[in-house]
Amino acid sequence: MASDRFALTSLRSACVVALALALSPPAAFAQPPRIPQPAAATPQASATPPAATAPTPDSEAFCTSIRDPAAEARFAWQAKTLKSLEGKLADTLAKLEEKKAELQQLLDQRDAETKQAETRMVEIFSRMRPEAAALQLAAMDQGIAASLLGKLAPRNASAVLNEMEASRAAQLAQAMNGERLKSAKDTSPAPGARTR
Image (cartoon, rainbow, N blue to C red):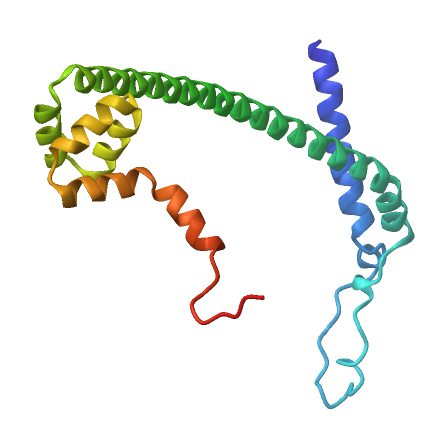
C-alpha cells in the first residue's frame, strides 16, 4: 500500500516536471544569455513577439491528451454536485410537506373548535328567553349577531327580532340576507338604463 502511494506521488511529480519542460522553449537551454541592445539599433525588436510565447508541439500534444480526461472529470464533479443538491432539495421538500401536513391538521382542529363554539352559542341563544337574547344580540357585533340569528330556528329568531328595537332588527335582518340582496343588486339594471 505504501509502495503504491509512493509510485503515485512519483508519477505526479514526473508529470509536473514533464509539463514544465514541455511548456518551456527548448531553445532557452541551448542559447547563451542575450545582451540587451539599444533601442535605436533594433527598431523591429518591439514588433516581433518573443519566441517563448509560441506553443511547442510537445505542449500541444500534452494539452490535447489531457483535454478529454479533464472534461470527463469536470462533468463527473458537476454530476456529483448536482446529485448532492438534488438530495438536499428532496430533504427540504420532505420537511415542507411535513410542515404542510402539520399546519393542515392545526387548521382542521381550529375549524372543529370554531364549529363547536358556534353550535354551543346557538344552543345557548335558542334556550334563552327572547327578551334576554334580544338584549345580548343588540349589543354584539352585527356580523356575529346576524350569524347567530341565521343559525337559530326560524321560530326562535323571529321571537328575538320581535323583542329588539326596530332599527337594529332591520339591520340584522338585512345583514342576514346581505348575500341575496347583493346578488339581486348586481343583476338589476342600472338607474337610467333602458329596458326592452
